[in-house]
Image (cartoon, rainbow over all chains, first blue to last red; front, side):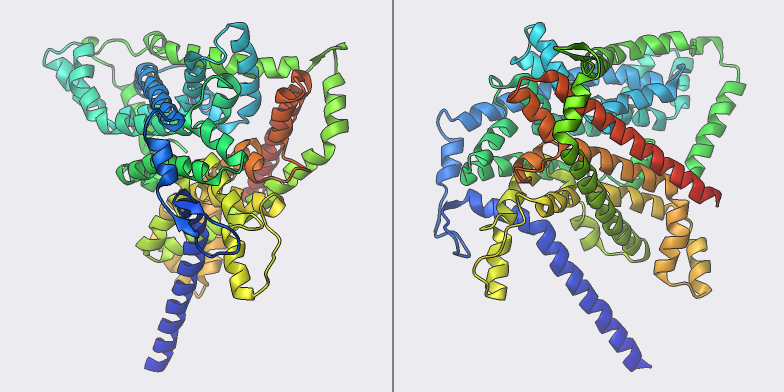
Length: 274
Length: 294
């Protein structure tokens, strides 16, 4: 009896080890390659590791008046504007969708989902021709607008789910005690909604920071955000420079992944109405 | 999945039944619509207008209004269309198998390592996945470096710049979201169903196939449609790891505009990609409904 148990245990252990090896290699392999390239000065086939390691390409990217730093600040500025404008329009919209008897509520929610759930490229192509006529193609304003429309789903859906999760009784109690409707919203509902609003801001920020297609069509060639710079470097086989930017763009996502871990529970996703 | 929705509906009807006191203010549609208006106006101007414009402009060419752009699109890009659908369906099938396997495993076993690691690609943007796969799968890339050391074969063909690299990149990027959604649905299936089946001698595989999957049908559907749409619409991965020919439709669309300045055919290709998405989503939906009816 114990023999059978032992073989079963071994089989489970071996299966686990096989899964760890395959999954570990499959998931970490491509990222490890990019990380190695960012620190490689010389790496010729068929050497298993770079012949020469160094911080040269990191130094190039991060010191002095480098193109990479300019692109980084531009990307961050655009992302912050997108977050600000996005929250400004999404908080009232999310509140209304959560609390009011808005006609065609389902249709409206699907409409806000559309930019993420339908091919985006043709929309960006036409946006670029419309923006060109309006003279905002190739400007920060144009790129910001492109980022806003694709991140609207995160801000509207997450704020709606957040306001839904806050009991309406709390607002009613505040109003009962003499607060105005607007006062109750700012004093009671908004502070309670803060974690959800922060989650939505993070999604919007990352989405804007990493956005490529819209920036490429609406902003090219004047607006050089970090993703555009990375793409140009990678297409030009400038592996080190591209890898440095790739790592720079990955770090914020991984940091926020740790923060969002709380929010990314399956139950929360369910709250989004999926 | 069902309980919260039911509760929501119950509380909603309770609210409707209760006459709101006068100080609570109106809850009619008008103030709600006003609050939504800014977001909706933005969506209309920046999304719906370009979307409609892509449909309208696909019928306009130098020859006037008609199907000229579509005739040209089909004569130039029929192979790419079939290639795009083929690659997308293949990626979708692999994503389905992997995500159901991981979600099924995690439904029965607690394994924090796996639960953490599988989510990693969720946080890596498409563009970075494209670049990393370019480095990893190239003929002289990291994968071949390791494989040629193990096998002793000096020159191996690279997976990048071909259909293999494309499928690997799409699957790598897409399976975590599908797994996350499907696992969420699996976890909301009550333990008692699963225990009953296991006690009666069903294998875990059979429990997944005959209990977990059918109950989670709608969520699985959503996960697959999301995967399908983001695969068929992705521009960066095929630009970075695709073959020069045949290419995925988004690449054709992009080249049509940037190299040929031909917006009509690009828009026709765009509308064709809308139609592909709608047709497959519809077919899948219908199939699911029939399965549930049987």
